[in-house]
Image (cartoon, rainbow, N blue to C red; front, top):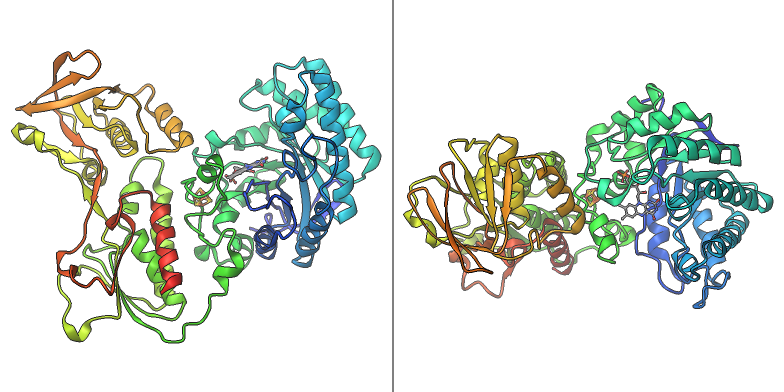
Length: 588
Ligand SMILES: Cc1cc2nc3c(=O)[nH]c(=O)nc-3n(C[C@H](O)[C@H](O)[C@H](O)COP(=O)(O)O)c2cc1C
Ligand code: SF4
C-alpha cells in the first residue's frame, strides 16, 4: 500500500498520494452557479477523504461560460464559485484541477470545423485563465470532441499542438490530457495521439472510460494504461473500475501506471483513501459497479446518487441528522435493501429499531442479483448495510416471520418492507417439465441441460436468467410478448447484457405470446402474423413476468401505525426502494 500513498508529480505539481478523483458530471450545479453548496460539500468530502487530486467536472456546455448565444464569457458567479472550490479543497489538504471539455454548444454553433476548433480553443483558454486566477492547481483537457477519427489526423495533431500552446501561453498550470480515442481509433492511433500531446506539452495522460464500459470487471483497462505508459515518459493515470486500494497498489507496484483514477469508488466511499492508508480495508464501502445511482441517473438527466452511499450530494444533511426528541419503538419487517436502509437511518436518528427477517440471512433480492454472473459485487450492498445495522445497534431477528403482534410488544410504528414474489403463470399448469421462477433459477445454481429451456419474459430479470443459464451450458429460448426487450432497464446495462448474450446459445423471440403448455410442449403465437407454433422445452421453463408485493396479512388493520415501502408497496429497482426507505426514515 506504500506505493499508493507515496508522493508523486504531475508536471511540477506535487501530489500527496497517487489517488485522483476523475471528473464526474453530478447534476448538482444550479443554473446560475450562485449557491452551489451541494457541489462544494460533495467535493470537500472527497478531499477530506484523502484523494490527492480532484478533477472538477467540465463547466462548459452550459451557461457557466457562455451566454445564451454561445459567446465566450464567464458567468458572473463562476469566478467566485471557482475560488470557493479551490479554497475548500486546499483547506482539506488536496489539490484541484478543472476539466475543460464538452463545449458542445460551441462546437455545434457552426458547421465549420475550423471555426469550431477556434471557438473551443478560445473557451478553453478563457476557462484556463479563470481557473488559474481562482487558485486551481491543474487543468484537464477532455479529448472527446477534438480527437474524432473522422478528422484528418494531420490537422487533428496540429489542433492539439495549437491548443496546448494557446493555453500554455496564458497559463502555466500542468495540463492533463484525457484520451478520447479509445473505441474510435486503433491502439496505434491512440499511442500516436499520446506522443503528440506529450510533445505539445501535456503533463500526464488520463485513461478514459466510456459509460458503456463501466460494467466491465475491475481493472479492465489496465492493459491500455500499461501500453500508454510504455509509449510516453509523462505520468499515466490508470482508470476503469479500480474500486479497491489493493488493486490500485498492485498496479503501481508493477509499473502499469503512475496514478490511479477512482471515480465511482469515491462516490461509494469518499473516505476510501484515508481508510486504506490506516489499513482499515474492511471498513471501505466498495462500489458495486451497479451504475444505478451514477451513470443511470446521469443518462436520465437527473442528479447522481449512489446505492452504496445515499449521502452523495447530501453530505451535510445526512452526516448531521437532527436529534429525535421522543425516540419511537419501530419494527421493520423485512431485511432487504429497503428494510435495512430504513432501519439504518432510523437507528442513526436515535429511534429504537428492531428488524425481523423471515429468511436465515439479510439482503433480500440483492442476494439474488449478486449471483448473476458479473454482478457479484452486489453482495457489498448487503454486507455494508449489515455492518451499519450492527454498529447502529439495530436488534435483528432472523428466521422470524411477522405473522402476528401481541399487544404488549406492539411498536409505535411498523414498517413493512417484506419485498415481492415472482408472478406465476396459470397457463403452465399442464406442463410436466420443471417450472421455476427466474429468481429461483439464479439462486439455485442448478443446471437445466436436459434440452431446450424456455424463459418467459425478456425484461432485465428474464435476460439475466437466460444469461445465467447460458453460462451454465443451457440452450435457451426467451419469449417476450412485447416488440421491445429489457424495457425496464437502462440502455447502458441493456446493451451490456445483450453483448454478453452474443455467441451464447440464447435465442430471443419478441412479439410472441404463450398460449398454453402440455407435457414439454409450449404453444406460441406470433402476435403480428397470428401464426401458432409449438416449442419443446424439454429442459424446463423459467418464468420472468414480473413481481407482486408481499405484505403479511396479519398487519392489515394497523393502518395508523403502518408504512409499506419498497417492493412490498410497488416492485421496482433496488435504489428506488432504498431512497423511499430513506425518505420515510427522515420523516418519522
Ligand atoms: C455519472 C458519471 C459522470 C461522468 N462524467 C464524466 C465527465 O464529465 N468527464 C469525464 O472525463 N468522465 C466522466 N465520467 C467518467 C469517470 O470520470 C470515470 O472515468 C468512470 O466513471 C470510470 O471510472 P471508475 O470505474 O473509477 O468510476 C463520468 C462517470 C460517471 C459515473
Ligand atoms: S451507484 Fe453503484 S456503480 Fe455507481 S458509484 Fe454507487 S455503487 Fe458504484
